[in-house]
Length: 185
Image (cartoon, rainbow, N blue to C red):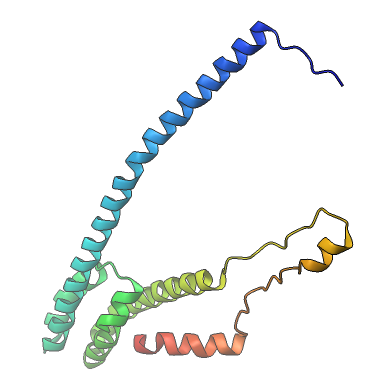
């Protein structure tokens, strides 16, 4: 089949479109270069905030252990409730356990402490579930399709096996959840 002749106008139009696509690509590349430092600064801010929260939580744990009367605990509750917590912070400081132990000595404050600990328990369970979901989402390999129909090519290539990640059953999950949230009690 004979190839169609390209006119001068078609050639100019294609060149114009190619230049436009190149300009767009250059603009996108410049903009994406700005994202790296932005993400790095956001990560640094997050790490600094987590470090400050960890130090505040350690100080609160120390203050809770030194707390000898109900007025002292009342003064700490506002600061405790405004503390931004994460699962690693709760695990490393054991602040829920200390708070529950201290509040057991003062029954009048217990009704203020219970919602705080319930909120922390929910935050902890949510973050642990997010981590577990990430671990279960293993990269899946796609089976390769052979386009050749000859017997030599189909016998030499073996199909890849795609394995789905195994999720624990409800009994294992319940045991794990009990183990995870033990320190919150």
